[in-house]
Length: 169
Image (cartoon, rainbow, N blue to C red; front, side, top):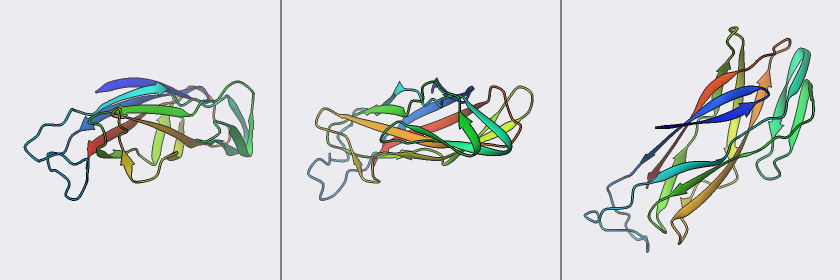
């Protein structure tokens, strides 16, 4: 399992990656391989880390939304973006060309700081739909975004893990 790091408003998330391969072939799929034929193992690599620009919150707290399509960050509630760059995450999955795959990412990640404070990353979503298929080159690029929820009065460096798994269908 690889560990890669993403930043969230001064927070760092480690990304846990794993690739699983199914052994069953897929009926009626023109790209399907017979059960006895081995497929190339799936490989997951982070191309770009998910990073929120610094955010400040008032007593009521707020959130920072990062759009997967545009990469733009918007602050909500009692929060303001302090400038800097925000980047949507990008993961490249490589495997057997034309094969259908399933990618799983959590919807909520709890972050914690060394001082014991917590924040949440919620609504982790990608730009792709539910039916994913590797291209003719055996690659699929998955861009994703999330929303960082911050309670009022929190500051510091927050850490957490984002597990990403992929498997053949």
